[in-house]
Length: 414
Image 1 (cartoon, rainbow, N blue to C red):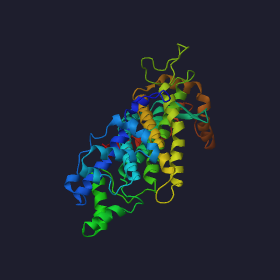
Image 2 (image 1 turned 30 degrees about the vertical axis):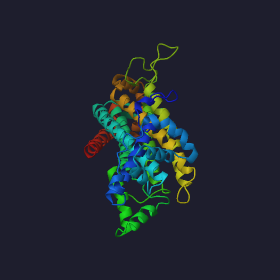
Image 3 (image 1 turned 90 degrees about the vertical axis):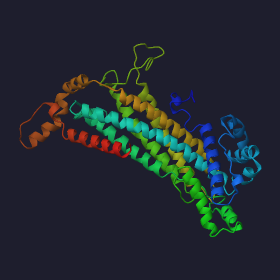
């Protein structure tokens, strides 16, 4: 996929695409049909391989037909039933509702997004750990409210980036682990499935209905959970993790963009053919990766807010409109997060650190950046050391702590 409105969109490949969602919906229908057979509610003849029955070639037809019922599951079920045998058609989708299929498909699609993000985040943790250790003693000017403050090291700066990225990564791990299937029937009570079990004269029909949901969820590799038609935490939690990632990447990108300004030039993005060029000014080397990552960080919070707004306005046992708002919002947020993740990884792996420039900037502001140190010395009538490179506080410990945390994260999420 490509998107002229969002340069770099192709980095997300087919994640959260229409074809991916369609494939996931078919997987949900197939898993439920198999579970009905396994539980003895549907005859073995009703089982059917749905893998190639509906394909990406059907997306356009289904998208156009979706308007009539308000969602794509209704025409999908009709299409599947028209293309499979009579027994499979009779039992297909029996006991499910459209929201079950679409919610679970969304979860499957976003799980792939989270898996890709974890790959990128692991790469970022490695790159930042290397940068932080390599530059643990590389002195530079610390800046607060845009002004020179006191000395720090670039290693400490990288360590702060690292902590932020691990914070975000831990939320991604939690969101990934807690993704549930949505299998509840019309109002979340599995009434039709329970009734089927009762009419089959199976013992404990309610248990059988729950077991069908368990079998289908486990087939899809998802957590088995009570129906959450109107309790949308699984999706808002995931959206929050995505937004927190873009926050962390935006922090990195903002620092890199600032420190790569011509008059500062302490950092530089990795070079690439045609990368950072201008249509009219051939001398420019724009920090394009940082610009695009900041774009994602600026746009993501509004998408996350939309997910929470939809959750808050989810009423009755099945929502009207709020649920429908989530689909494209989550897709956009997921794809943009993957794009920003890829760009951030590239940025960190190729980041150029100009230690000499950092030292020169620090030396040019030496008198100012040690003013605090002078005040401390005067307070105790102690000797004053004017060398800013020796006024670094606990920067070594900050780096060591962040790097150790990074190693632990990598070990726990190998």
